[in-house]
Image: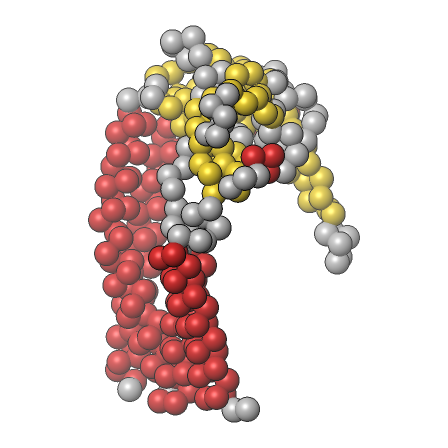
Length: 287
């Protein structure tokens, strides 16, 4: 089988996968559509043990109302339970989901989730068809077509999404400027050591945990993975915490650093668009 036949087969197979996925979504039988999504509330937060592991996130007790019985259900996030809870306080609303008729297989998310149509996998299959078509054009017509096929559509995609990224940056900067400021303390430093099974390389992940009380009296416990000097030796250190009053999970120890990060993100998006346009133009010039 030559490259042409292989690429045609590639596109055909992933095209069928995409059609099946979209068909299942229309029929309402995707995994996401068969998932029950609820809103839970944190009832109790257990302070992490200094020197412990970050695995599983901050330990919490969560209650929610079962849709079938209408009764209150109380569960914990012990074990593999979906997203890691990295910010917690009593009364915080989080997402709880489980497969239909399998409430014991519940999973958490940091925010309540809206119903989903399950279009992620068929969308990825369409992307693989696109990749196959670009490579097929390059094989059949010459490699400059790969530059056009890659740079052109992605430049348009990035340009369409740039205004949204700029608006998101502006909203984030406004929230940074309006943040409240309180004193907090690093109540634990978590340490996780992993060993690569192939080469035996050891890597260590340090996760400080900061605790602070908002101005309205809400006690927040959260992982703090950035803007903290010498995180390994931060246990017991007093820190200044800037947080959003509407959502204390959005906090920082350095507003200026966050502001610079937002500016860099937008500048990076603009640079990507310039590179993609230049790639497409170079392909057109060489055709």
